[in-house]
Structures are given as structure tokens and as C-alpha cells.
Image 1 (cartoon, rainbow, N blue to C red):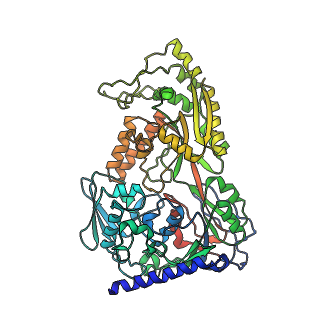
Image 2 (image 1 turned 180 degrees about the vertical axis):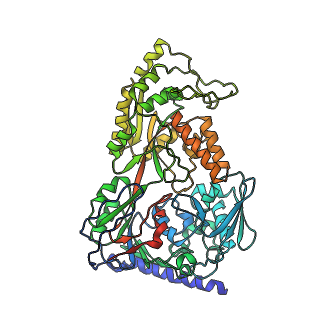
Image 3 (image 1 turned 135 degrees about the horizontal axis):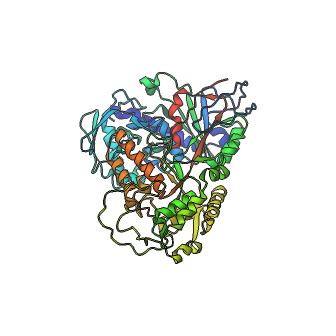
Amino acid sequence: MPRGLRLPFAALVLASALLIAALLTRSDEGRAVPATVTPEPSPQPTPVSLDVTPAPAPTEATATAPGNVLVEALVGRISRLNPLLATYNPVDRDITALIFEGLAATNEYGEIVPDLAESWTVSPDGLEYFVTLRQDVLWHDGLPFTAEDVVFTFRLLGDPLFPGAEELRVFWRTVEVDALTETIVRFRLTQPLASFPDQLRMGIVPAHVLEGTPVQDLARHPFNLSPIGTGPYQFEALTASGGQIDGVQLRVAPVYRQRPEGGTGYQLDRLVFRTYDTVEAALTAFRAGEVHSIGTIPPEALDVARQTPGLSLYTTIAPRVGVLIYNWERSAVRFVRNPRVRLALAHAIDRAALVARHLSGRAMLADSPLLPTSWAYVPGSPWPAYDLTQAQALLQTASFLFEQPAPTPEPTATVTPAEGEPPPEGEATPTAEATATPEATPEAEEEPLRLSLTILTYDDPALLALARDIATAWGQLGFRVSAEGVPAAELRARLEAGDFDVALVEFSFEPNADPDPFVFWHQGQYQVGQNYGGMDDRRISEELEAARRDPYGINRLEHYRRFQQLFAERAPALVLYYPLIGYAADARLQGVQLGFLGDPSDRFRTLQDWHFEG
């Protein structure tokens, strides 16, 4: 056997033996790290939170003695600890984020920064990225990280037989990847894509371990439960109960300690992850002293977490935005193509009051279709203020009679509307623009009283109550509006089928860190992306296109500033709220900082500074 393969082969055999042993053990025997000693009381910390001040932890503490071990509860199950196959499993993504690294990472503002890459440059045409790799990185088995690993990883993703997420396979089939030297890799795109560095956050896997494995067999490789990466923590053992894997133990990687960023900090020598079926079960485990932290607290469970003794709650904005979208293509709702109607609908809703009433403690008022934690967010967009009188006045001059779409003439110079007037609508595409009569006839003025709408939403009680209050507000304008709550699977199916009038939905940026909202709002994403309602505004689409093409952040920021301003002025949809997401930990855990989250695993960004007091 070649000398370079002896160590990884031995590690693989050992890990397989550990896995078999783990699967044969019972719950009491399978726990790798006991946590049963009650510590001495320690002062309560003041956790740092981006948006919501964490609830003061009660003096009673039920979590067990931590020492240098953090035991964390995750909701879900471990499937494959391989970053290439972890797309759809949050538990796998959390764990692999600590074992593996990408060429790039994110900072606290969501900016893409080098990680395994030392730097990169972009060709003038935006089609080629030249990535220079670090030369001080070792795999956990001691072998050096090289360009061969990078090329191997991304060619795997683009292989027609790749068994992971289809969107990864589709994207990477369009990218050529070549190693120019042992430390320089070239990526060649088919068209400029400013968000490409975000794709480089994908964890790199070792070619010397997986090379020679048929791509179609990748999902069954033992590596997936005995991984070797370059990250700060390395795989140590699996735990099991009842014949099923229920956790994993990691420890600080010695080879990572040799790197400049690993020389200090990382007082948590070991991380133990235990899996539970629900958040409620995870909270129960904390109260019983089985775990010290809970990886992700969804919005609906934040209040319960705040009331749990000994638990400090850290909150930040989840990578999602709650919006009210219109179906521009549905004949019964085509009047939303008229900007006066949309502005009237916007002025009729007191967004701040409704979000405070129904989502207090689990969401905050949104003022942009972009995340406020992102570098691309620009505050101060001129959103329509709540003004029922203004809403009624706008409807009196709005037309509700629409003919079939007709070609529009070549666009002329833009005329700035008079103060207080809504912006002109003339920039929608010719194939989708509806032609309105210049003046409302007496019959048209009565038409709104006979218009019926249904707001479709997920059947969460708070969201359904929010939708009903919006329906009531629009009822004051003469509309007949109802709200309908449906299960998540049905909601998605109806959105994709265009079977709705108006929908209250949450658009998710996860797991992307780049702020690009192209898939939600570009006119070309109707029926192929997530522009479910066929929103059709040419000027908004142009800004999104320009932001996608330009690789320079300062230029992209200006495009996104104009995008947000146009969105507020034209109200093609109504942004309502940003959901909050929480991380809950023993009150003695210090150093936790939540900034930008493109994915919940980004909570580990400051893990180097985490430590227990007391």
C-alpha cells in the first residue's frame, strides 16, 4: 500500500469499528461524554444580541458541569457528515461546518472573505476567477491541502452522477475548474456572476481519501460517518442508542492548532452533539442537565426558551423575509399591475402595528426585501406609510378595467412624477403589461366593491391572524378579502402552481450568504424561480441584472440601493417582517456573538472565543 494512504486507511478502519460498536450500544452506554456534576454557582453573563436583548437567565441553573466540553442539542438526525451531501440536512450542515472549510467564508456582515484561499482575482470580463490557496493547511490526517483537493471537490459536484443536491450539480456543470499550479486554481464561468465567491464556501473534501470512488457510490462511502477535514474540530466518535446514531463527538484538531488562527482560543476542547426529534425535547434535555446548549431555536419557540431557568437566549435575524406577494398573472387579480392600486393596498396596512401585535418576540418589522444584517442593506427606503385616507384617494383615481396584454411602444425618457403622485408603471415587459383605461368610468368606480381576494398563508396561528387583519384592513377599501391557512407542503405546491390571489410567504436566502434576491423578484424567474406571482417590473429587474454582473462590491451596493428604493416606491409586493432565530446556551457560556447568519451554522463564527465561567 502506498505510504500516503496508510494513515487514512487506518483511520477509516478505526472509525468503522467505532461506528459498529456505537450501533450495538444502548443509550446509557453510548454517551461519549457524561455531564452529571453540578457546578458551583457563577455570575450571570450579559449575552450579546444583534437585535433582541437576551432574556436574563434565572438564578437557578440546571445544566451540568461543562469544564472544557460543550454538549449541544440539535433537532433532527445525523445522515452524512459530508459537506457535499449536507445541503438538505441542517444537522449535517452544523457539524460539517466545524470539520470542513471552504475556499471562502463569511464575516459578521455577510461579506465573502478568504478561508482556505489566500486571495482571488477576477478577469476583466468577469468570467474567470483565479484563486490562490494557503500553503499552511493540513488535513486532519496530516497530509497537505493542495489544489488537487479543490479540483477534485468541484468536479465531483459537477459530475452528471453526483448524488447530492440537484442545484449544485446543475450549477457546477457550467463551471470549468483547473489547477494551474499546486496553489492556484482557475474557475471559468459561462457568464459573469458577481455572487460566485459565495459558491466557494462549499466545504472541500480530501482527494487522497475519496479519489477512485465511483461518483454514484459517494453517498454510501464510510467517509460520510468518519470524515476527515481541515476545520478547527475533527471527528472523534459517534454515539448511538437503540441501534441508531444519536450524536457525534468532535475535538480540537491538533493540525489546526498549528495554524495562526488556531494558536489561541478554542478553550472548548471537545464538542458533543446530541440529536432530538423536536425543540421541546431539546429544551427538556437542557432542564435535565443532559446538554449545555440548543443549536437553533425557531421563532415559535423563542418565548419558551426565554422562560427556561439557567438558559441565556441569543437572537438575530434569520436568513428569511416575510412578504405579501400578489399574483400578477391571475385574471381576477390583474388590477395589481396598476401602481395606484398597489400603493393604495400598501397605505391601508399599518405594518408596524400588525407585526407588533401578532409577531412580537419572534419577528421584527421589515423595511427592505434584503436582510438588514447584510452589507447590501440600505436603510431609509420610502415605504408607503399607513394612511387610510390616502389609500382611498388613490383608489378613486385607479382603474380596475384591464384588457388583454398589448405590445407597448419603445420606452421614452423617464418623467419624474409630481410630488405625492405614484411612479409610472410603463417599464413592465410588453408581453406582461396590462393596458388600463385612462379614466375610470362610473362602472369602474363601483368595481372594487365587487372584488374578492383570498390571502393564502401557512397555517401557523400567528401568521393566519396577521393575514386576517390585513384582510380586514383591505375591507375598508371596499374589497371582500378572506384568509386561508394551509400546511407547508400545500402552500408550496399552490405557490408553484400559481394557485393563489395574494400570499403571505417567507423567502429564504439560506444557505447563501450573498444578498442576491434575483430568484425572487426578477421578471424572468416566473415559473422557473421563486417569482411565484409573476411580478413584472423592468426597472427592478435591470438593477438586479446589473448587480449580478458587476463583481465589485461598491458598484453592487449602488445597484442594490436603487433596487431597494424602487421596491419601496412601486410596492410590487409588501415586505412585512424579518423572523428571528435563536441560539440558547447555559448562562455560564461566554463569548457568544451572533452577527449575520446565512445559515444557522454561522453561529460558530466566534467559537474560538467561547468558554465557560464558573
